[in-house]
Image (cartoon, rainbow, N blue to C red):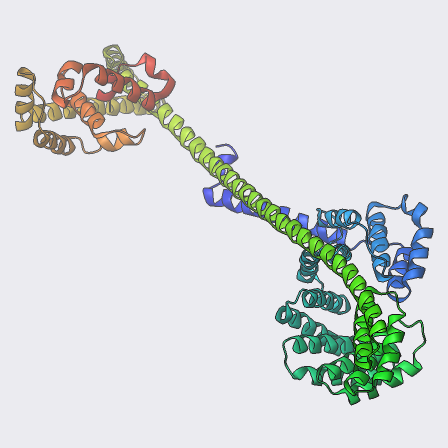
Length: 592
């Protein structure tokens, strides 16, 4: 037996599974090793500066630009990611997404540091956001959230907040609320007052858009938290939101009281001052104090922002119309129409950009769906190939062992046949008889020599015993043949042969029964070598206990003579293998 034949099918399966498991563990180990790369100190410092001082981080990374070309692969990709991150932190809008997309492609590839993939997704989303492609921005924000590390709560809060903000801008209020609440939960755990205030402010916006009075409670809570944080900028933003809410509710006195102190303390170059001018103007207008409203709307009109120009010129035209100054009213109305046209053009361009972004996103999803289907088909095909390979391996092992067993049986059959033929040979029988006589004669002559007699006696007994067995075997075969010829079925078979007619099913069954009774182990010995059909067994049985030729057997069994000849060749090859050409089939069967 060779090595393969020593293993059972279960052992082969176990070995295959173990090999696959070892391969999987090796791949996982490689991936883990790649994700635990130690980065140079200057890159770690740059990453920290991105959070605390983005402009300084940009300068630091620019100084490393030449050195980055000689860095290792992992370090150079980290450098490129930090360049994208620092520009986003410094509020420098992205002009395209190619670099961010390239970084994502790298970190998605096998062997890359997977801990950086969440950041790559987020900053690619930010690049799409800067290009006003909100659907794609949301796509990558959500991808970042699916893989964000549990310990990275600060980053998770930022991604949730940014996702909620973009959904709010697209008027998906209920979905946005979930992300703001998750960000608020994380920031509350971190005790980050500023971000808690911003999250509460955005939740209040959602409630306000949904006409839910709960918004006031959130605005108030956001302002309370901002005041406790001593962050003046955050505090002013929360006051602006609450003041706008008061104006919407026509509580002009409260809006005025909240906005005027901020206006007096703010510097003129503060961009947030415009919103307070608008609130103050609307408050005084609502209170009927036109001159005060006129002052604040004139201050608002001095800005170059299109939206504030539209609002301030519209309100100034309205106020001067109330005051009866039609000339100034018409002047500001013309200014309003001009600014409104410009704003309309911007809105149209923005709408077209959004439509193009939505179309691009739809195409992206379709491509992704097609790619996923392709990957799925490839995975299924690979599974099928693996299963077929395993099946082929198992089949080969089973087939190989079966062929080895068949060859062994054929060898035994050939050796048994050779011994049987040798026993049946007349010359051999005469030689054996002569040997027995000589041995007995020598035994008689040397009976006084005890040692020699003891050596010769067993040989004589052995030959005599073997001769007796052969004689009994011949006698048994004669008895079997005699019993068969005396049976009823033999008479029926003889008559069928005489009239050239087939045996009926009932007669064949009677033949089977008679044969099993006469030679019970014959069929078992036949089947040990190969698979035989019922017709093949009956053909062999007729050859074994009768002298019918091939034509007569073919007639009895309802088969063609050529079919009988082919069956004999096929079976003889199965019984003894390559030695079949030297053996007569009928003679072989009669030796069984």
